[in-house]
Length: 71
Image (cartoon, rainbow, N blue to C red):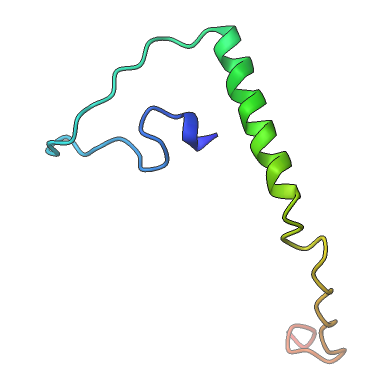
């Protein structure tokens, strides 16, 4: 969703910056639908890489006698 923001993922420039400011017209409902569809398509493309915990092994369980139990 950050890709569709006026300043992308970098955020608004500082007031003293010479970077060009972006003026964006108001967004219509059809624009919102297009943005959400684009975001959904990107997420669906990411799932094709099988990255993340879906295929990663589970981490080992913590020891039974941890320091947190004694506090």
